[in-house]
Image (cartoon, rainbow, N blue to C red; front, side):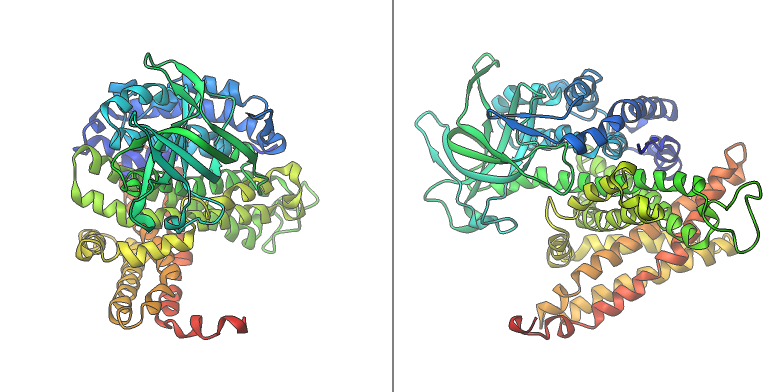
Amino acid sequence: MPSYKAPVTDQMFVLHDVLKIAEQDVPGYDELDRETTEAILDEAAKVAQDVLAPLNSIGDTEGCVLENGVVRTPTGFKAAFDQMREGGWTALDCDPEYGGQGLPYVLATAVGEQFSAANMAFNMYPGLTHGAYSAIHTHGSDAQKETYLPKMVTCEWTGTMNLTEPHCGTDLGLMRTKAVPQDDGSYKVTGQKIFISAGDHDMSDNVIHLVLAKIPGGPDGIKGVSLFIVPKFIVNDDGSVGERNAVSVGKIEEKMGIHGNSTCVMNYDEATGYLLGQEHKGMRAMFTMMNEARIGVGLQGYAQADVAFQNALEYAKDRLQGRDVTGVKNPEGPADPLIVHPDIRRNLMDQKSFVEGARAFAFWGASLIDRAHKLEDDAADGLISLMTPVIKGFLTDKGFEMATNAQQVYGGHGYIEEWGMSQFARDARIAMIYEGANGVQALDLVGRKLGQDGGKHVMAFFEMVKTFIAENKGQDADFDAQFIEPLKNASKDLQAAGMYFMQNGMKNPNNALSGSYDFMHLFGHVCLGLMWSKMALAAKARLEAGGGDDDFYQTKIATGRYYMARQLPMTATHLSRIQSGAEPVMALEAANF
């Protein structure tokens, strides 16, 4: 059975040596000293390693079952869910006014990484609830907040998001679900939604569905979409759970992965719903939930890569195969371990350098969210808006790639279910699809985010990289050659790609859209190049100060050198493909494929 060890040491390094959270001016960060942070992460690690990880393969094997209209979760899930709730883990960064602990989002992100790596399917239940909580917290009336949030903070009631219908996914303007106004101010919601993660289960007393629907007579298309709170059970005036609403599970989908999460077809038959936010402004409210979910899905991508890497590394150290071409390394055995071979090292270094770079990128993104929310910092808000499709798209694409790379280390055993590597690859695959398929993330990045607010946010990113290079160049010849110059070259590639879009996208939009996926990956590599440069600088400083774990910091710098030398040069390839324009992509008529 695969194992998982929470990377507390590396998480602490990113939080305190790279991001220096305790020194920032964000409210609440001053309370996150090293001792407090480490204590929280250590306790989370116990839950991840001892409670959630052992249930991961059970959830994959058993899946969820629909019995007489009730969804049964896998063995052990409910007890683990109760334990998570009782430990306060679902309330970590929620508003204290509604029973939350009020800790910063960046710390909740670190904890969420551990839980997602240990058991991705399980962690989706509280994860989706948090997204629904955020939508109600931001857009709900005071009465709605008082009614729903306290129980959602504790996950006594869980939440969902209902967007997709059988005939429409990304193009939500085509939806048919309708909401008819009633005299008492409620609505009757009728329609069918599909692919609803955690749509129903036996671990909470109520499920609070957030459902997109159209009010008859409203504007056509996406402008006529509204968002509704549709509880599984009607909530009585005293806050207790009342009668069953007219919402039911049509079936549980048979999926490639995340079997432990109930992905449901949800049927609404004149179910009672309550408008959340304004009429015909449903997408504004839903995007509060979706943007949070997209950051969380990016986290899922690298978290699955991490747990897969951990197991592949152990296998590579234990499995004896062949001899090292430079000389025998295990003279007492019939062969040397796999890890002596350069191609296995390459594979493992690809994984390690991605996971650690992605962790820093995700934590930095979470710190931007804290800054945007707690300080109402418009610059931080604009920057994380720009970064969201990169975090979601790049980290899940590469996360799946690294999960399959880890599987490759095992050879034939990686293809056998009992070793567990198949589950990591299968679970990671969905992250590239849901919460907006990665092709849509790339289109959003190039089509909307680059030009947002006159392009000032992408220009701010370029200025950030330029400033980092200027402030740190010339201090150390090796650091310049191994980090500063590669980062400078990669940033130039990113700027050249943006310039190509400006010069060619207006006269033929396909020139921009054909290169959008490459641009998303180019941007992702530059972001990880920046993160690795920052991490190498922090590790170098700790080595020079002395008194630390020299092996850890030297390993960090060596891993960063690998990424800058072996991965970051991909920016040139992506730029070349972008500059080839639309013609190679659009050359064939549809009939000629």
